[in-house]
Image (cartoon, rainbow, N blue to C red; front, side):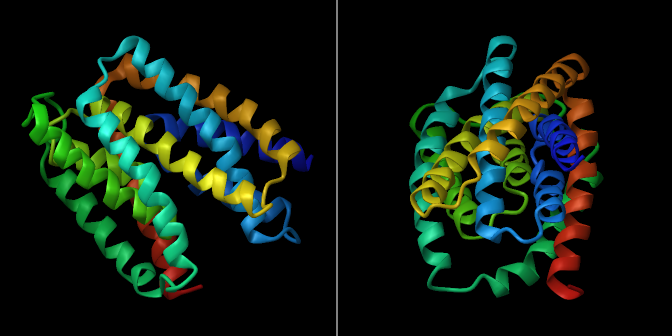
Length: 252
């Protein structure tokens, strides 16, 4: 029964994560609930092990059907990979307490901005090209990579928002690029957890199968229904993130 719960959670997490990110909202609490005596670092590592397969499957599935803006995706992914390690190292020296309390308000600003601008992310009209786009992508990848290694909640949703807001991508294209960058972040974190011995391989690989299945369903839904659908799921996931991070910061 416990493994069934984890498999269902991994499937739903993969589906949501494939569309806009935020699958950890479902997968991580499920792991903590089913395996309460396991070290938190091992549960987080196991979640990354399951999630990276689903995110990779979503990236590949998207790439087959939607044009990937590689000029932005590649430099952002490479920088995110490097800075994720830096963030993971920094969190061992500086507690993220301040960021924990600020995050709900940042997410609320993202939610209100997206809600107010009805046409936000509906049209794919890239604002930059060439070296300028690459340099901005390096900045975004570095910042998000560091954040993911240092703290983490909402990384996928932040990526989608940033690629819509600052690159002019529509929600669908932004989600595709976000997947590529997310794979890089997850790989860096996974290597860290593997090095430190915090992985439950059997549980993680079992969940990975279900996560991949969910991600394939999620990508098909996103491609079939377009940016308007992705925008709705984005607002839903961000609203959940606001509630979750607000609870963790002020009530837990």
